Length: 467
Image (cartoon, rainbow, N blue to C red; front, side, top):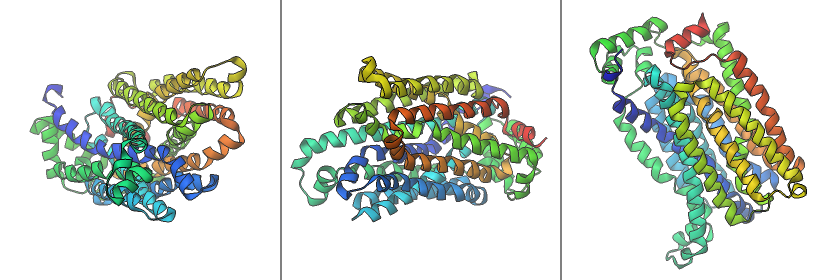
């Protein structure tokens, strides 16, 4: 196929629109880090209640990911993107206007359902319309959007806090003073409603996934989309024939395919790496970064600023990953990145245990933190959603991704709930040593059980598992 005929501008536009869901995912996930101290003080939360405040959105994510893939297989990827946009919008307004802690929990759960749905549907949608030679970097746009959402949340948290300390006291109007001065966490949580509404509106300008259309017997419409992607009728027909040959033009989800040994193995592998990846420290950094920084002796205001730096490194590293993932390959990135994660997690643990004895400055800990974020962003964070979006057969891709995504969000929920307990009982140093140990089985699974998918079509990968 002539690469010059491929309409990269159109594919890029569709991918960026779907990736906006990743931005909302990232913002909604990371914004919590700047509100924990305020909400804890206002409502008098203990460690368990604090963990529930952080983890309740993850309960919603588990609900969303459990049904999102199946509903995406049945009703279409585009409709599910619409639903996630509505959930994000409702959650943002509800968080901002909640009258008590219980309502705040309900609002966070609604947003969590949106996170769960979009975490499955957005990368799957991009994967199904991308051409093989660019699929890695296009799906990585989703992860890039997630990291931009993280950074956006950290910046908003920092700026709103500075505004609340300074000029916000001069605001007129009861609600404005409440949201941006007296209880600034409301503004932090509520501001995501603006990109959520934009996401809802722009989805009207993208088509349904062509592979989903083929699976539901709408081949003519799918061919029209492929024609716009590949630039010619002959190339569109060739791609359509490949999909039909691989799937026998199934018109509904084939649940029996999950019982095939190769497919079952792929689902178990995906679930294992999704679960283990959450116990390697990344979510502790996202949710409890300011708390961890403060425990190292950094003041509260500086800790929020350093969290912005963490977010910036995350974004810039993910930009690099977008450009190299299709050149270096998924597995090599994991080997390089996870090796670095182990090294810097151990150094962070050493700092907390023996930093004062060795005379290590807080700058040492911050440098190790940033190096760890770099290694994580260029490897497991960039690779996981790419792998999950391309590992499974077309007819059960949504269902299989829901199973893997459920494992991921269960792991995320457990980390969110357990991190305050781990920091108290294992100490920060022991917690980071534990995260380093969890990197080892992840690396072994990728090495021994995961095939290299770089440059292969989705149908070729499907044949690998089935045959």
